[in-house]
Length: 131
Image (cartoon, rainbow, N blue to C red; front, side, top):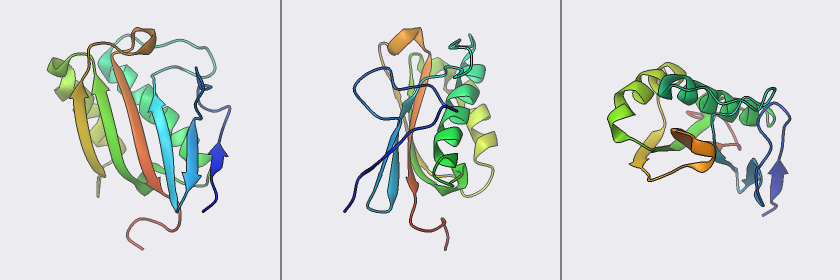
């Protein structure tokens, strides 16, 4: 099995010794995405806007491999306040309107750069979902 590093300027650069994503074994493992705008380095305030930005970053990374959010098999959502789950969930649902991936959500004490949400994903790269 070959391991390929996935990198795109359309999403924030890795802030440490990790890759935006790694492709191997027919899967793409997208590292946790903070809600940082890659063009400005800014992070929105609200959980809804942060969720949107994190998912847009995931979509950009997948696009670098010719994939879309429809190819996502599993997402992991990290929130600093589980009381914001419904706000995050409302935005998240709009990105996966049909056949949503498996998902887990966790409350964590703190996220890098003071983010309120971080999302990571695993996508199927060796053929489209449902094929």
